[in-house]
Image 1 (cartoon, helix red, strand yellow):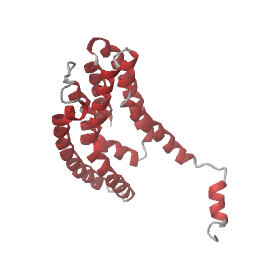
Image 2 (tube, helix red, strand yellow):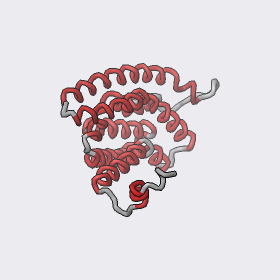
Image 3 (tube, rainbow, N blue to C red):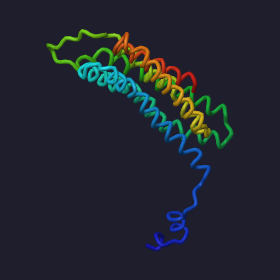
Image 4 (cartoon, rainbow, N blue to C red):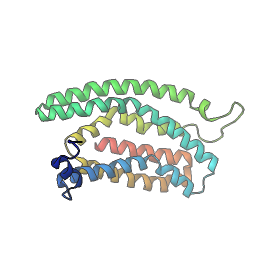
Length: 212
């Protein structure tokens, strides 16, 4: 109770002052995270816009969600990698950052390749009934794997930029990739359907990885 009544704590909780440096970092990063989430859903929205059947969109969305499992290794390792980068940055140890990036990426990409093969061999079992036939493209799942796989190999570059304070740069990357995704979906879905949506998403995700 004494701690809760501390003047310093009360000032921190109820002070109208805002740390501008924190806002300059946090606001772009929050928008960046939102756009990255949207990048994985724009294709389904665009498919609906062009009147693709609900059944096809449902299958496409389920496959897209399954391919996101490829990112699990990268996401797990990033929880360890990011504080490590912060530590090395404080120590001005650039070589340590590069070594950590190399070692962590090797581990996450190796696991992600195994997850890729597992998902691509089993995805129909999760989605279709035993007697159900699929007459649309069977190539689009491979294209949907491009983004998660690029994230596994190069996604930690984004974590590195973030820990060096470049949240606005990451936001610009996300805006560029999101705009490209919308444009490519608009151009490719009418002639190619699901394959066009997957191709647009693959190109956009590769673009943001290369930019990082």
